[in-house]
Image 1 (cartoon, helix red, strand yellow):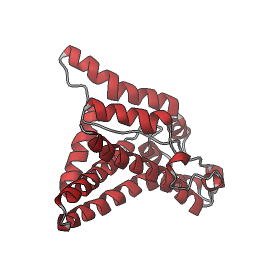
Image 2 (cartoon, rainbow, N blue to C red; image 1 turned 45 degrees about the horizontal axis):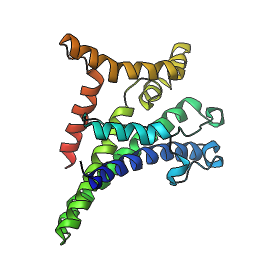
Image 3 (cartoon, rainbow, N blue to C red; image 1 turned 30 degrees about the horizontal axis):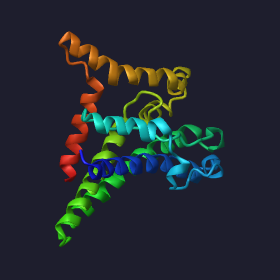
Length: 219
């Protein structure tokens, strides 16, 4: 992959990740929690959100390895759920905001991609088209990844955050255990499956197939 290709892949990934986090903070602020606002996290300045490993190193490794999946994360936007007037409802709304932002960006990018065909300069048209196509792919990929109901992903809060039961709250808050489970499911299990001659890439297959279906629908 050329340097231009890497930039045009990495930049949409960074935009998708940062917009996702800003959306969480903005909705939380609208619902009464200004923690993210007071911390300066409603800014689109990448320096406010970059996590060295999750925003730069991991996406770069995945892009260069060409394994077919790219994802990452920014520094989580701080949210104090105690500031919400309706904590369970507002938790779900805040968690949904990032996914909805990514889907909205994917839709807008798809519309602009159609319009890019009217650009007369072919080289410029190719660059812009590649950028917009990657915007569609990266935003859908991030939305699909985050809908998985394993903490700390948003899907766990959307599906279980509204349930007023001790087990549900323990599950949603089990972020370290959930992250370990994701590493095992996405990276370790598929490798073990390859050695055993088994297809164990369940999460990766779900992400790739769902993303491909949604991208083909838009573009």
